Image (cartoon, rainbow, N blue to C red; front, side):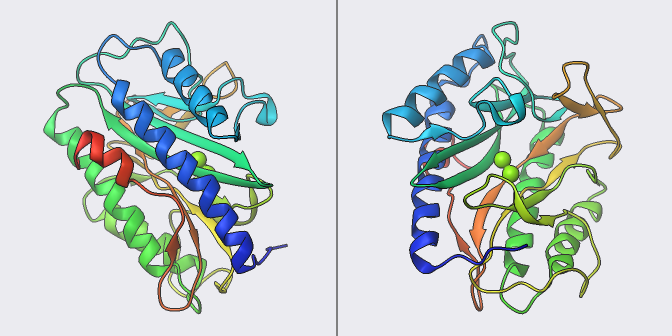
Length: 259
Ligand code: MG
Ligand code: MG
């Protein structure tokens, strides 16, 4: 069942997502060689709680962190750890959730650590651009296949691969609601998009093979060939003519500049 949100509910979702956006910017300020992913997790949790919210991921399905920290070949769901020390040239995808007023915010961004190789920066740039290609299609009267197709076509035309097993989702009172939002698909296929639907669109795009492995910890998902993977996510409300993006990369990019 897909829940349509009222205008008031969409404003509450915006509040949750703006806390996420600002949390990711706090993380951006400290990402550097020598920093551990556990340090990032502590900063995120403290900032989320200082803003009156609760980390939406902590305890979700037993996940131990407030954020997911996925380094290099890790695609998503990396567990923050004091053993993971960021190195110059790494990339790190940080996925963050904040829960307040009964609604979940959900957004992710992939950061560069120090000097990153141009071919990997290109992967990040394309993944972020593909998210906005998908968002362009996320409007009333289009279908979910149009969103996935836009992301897939854009990334595959640049010879990257699209992860299939992990996808976006509806978002609202629950972190994961219907519908499923794949990052691939056929034009004109899938559920019709209606004003008031709120979805998290989150391309996970690989430099090499699309295939993945889940590590023994039961969470960390990495590419089979250990080549890098990027992940960008916005929560959006479907509207007529144009999606309303509820999360934001603006605060992050005030810190980092654009990729
Ligand atoms: Mg997320
Ligand atoms: Mg999500």
